[in-house]
Amino acid sequence: MLRRGLAALAMALPLAATAQTDAWPNRTIRLVAPFPPGGTVDLLARVFAPPLSQALGQPVIVENRAGASGSVGTGFAAKAAPDGYTFVVVFDTHAVNPSLIPNMPFDTKADLAPVMLVATGSMVITGHSTAQPHKTFADLLAAAKAKPGLPQYGTIGSGSLAHLAITQMGAQAGFTGTHVPYKGGGPLAQDAYAGHVPIAIGSIALLAPHIRSGALVPLAVTTAARDPVLPNVPTVAESGVPGFEATAWWGVLAPAKTPPAIVARMNAELARILRDPQIAERLSGQGMNIVASSPDAFAKFIDEQSVKWARVVREHGIRAGD
Image (cartoon, rainbow, N blue to C red; front, side):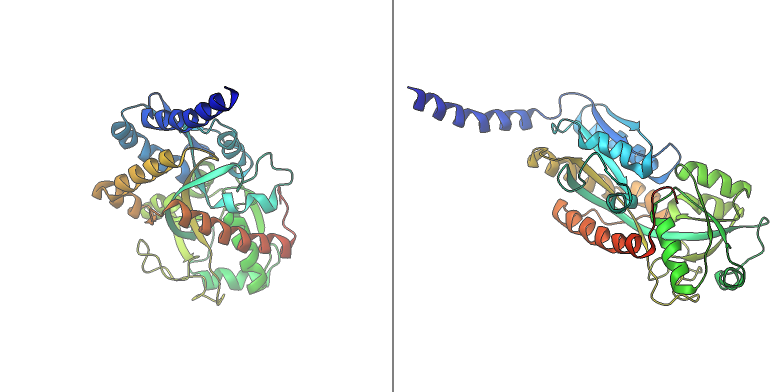
């Protein structure tokens, strides 16, 4: 009798899980943006929310939970129920945080399931059009080598990819700058626009509007090749730091153990949204080169980025708060 009961239970559990997946979604879905409003992560989440809601037939809300280079909001998502009602939009800091932030309350590999690498892009080094004198990256580099502590540069935060990139760049080129960390892309962009920080490094998506307005002068991009959004702006490697490369990226994760069928459905819906010509044009115009990867490809990409930037953190002794 007991054996028959256990057998019946074993058969019922997969059926229950299938039924739960088939019913998904039947209530509000939450997209966590682990950075403040105004940055590129927030922008991407808000681009996704309306078409996702329309496709899935349920409200999709964006919830900003900023702090600790994105680890506060990402940790919240990692601890959420793996039922398909919480997803998190992440940025390249996701691959940096594990090697930089001690005692993180979640494991980026064990507690999160990759859904999609949405896009990659360049970071751009900009100077304020009137608050600093340099019109080319070569000029900035020469000044930085001549005077320790220059340039004074702003990033979206301590331990951000931009912070690590400038540190690595300085080591290769022979200069030491003064880091001015902000609490997210929105505050950085505002101060860069106003000239409160003379040099800013961030994604093209973040800084392009102020480049177009003429407030910021683009000096160099950090990718190996020039960016199609700023085709006349040289790369850092072209401008005196051979071999240098740092790529910004954006992706979507779910809590670990989210049913694979739900992850696959979300991946498919995001891919469909990214094929929409208007959305693709909007994101491309912001410097996001659409990838729309599979979950497995995204997992491999995160591993590669984590290894690369962990080495930079280790070699230069970078700590959270630097």
